[in-house]
Image (tube, rainbow, N blue to C red; front, side):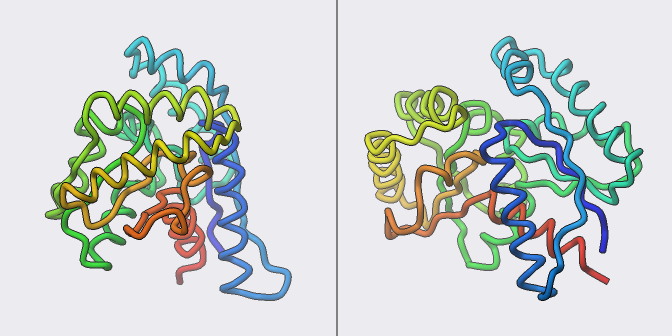
Length: 230
């Protein structure tokens, strides 16, 4: 079994979900008392969020690169970054280590292709929705990406940072997300990427008829399966 290195804490609520999913998959695959071999480096999210807000991506990349180096030295065989947004700096992280990083958007694209989804809506932080670092991974696989309008981007982003990253789950916020998902569905989206690792804490498949792709679940499951590949 390979050792998974997790860069977490962005936020810790979703990192806890990663740990739970990874170990559940290992138990289902191997049975008995098996659990995952993993190492967690949990950063201070307040420090990362400050970098995001100030556009200081180089500094945030440096913080995560040091985390990755520590995980490699501790014995990790590969790394997952337990957040969508910070894949923006994946190249800066990868250059300082000799083990691979499992990219969350590539994992998601694989699942979309598997389910014959060619036009998808993307929800996440404003950085993930508006910038190209994430969408480009989907577009290169032939997947068309829709994002909400400006007002809805603000709503989605505010709920993530002011509520979900603080462990606050509100029914009214869920309804805002469902309304946004419905509008994107009417624009032709065949599915919706929950492209922030906290969104799955708020919105579930039972809340809508359109297929939801929870990146936390997909990423964590792939990491678990990769750790036991021969």
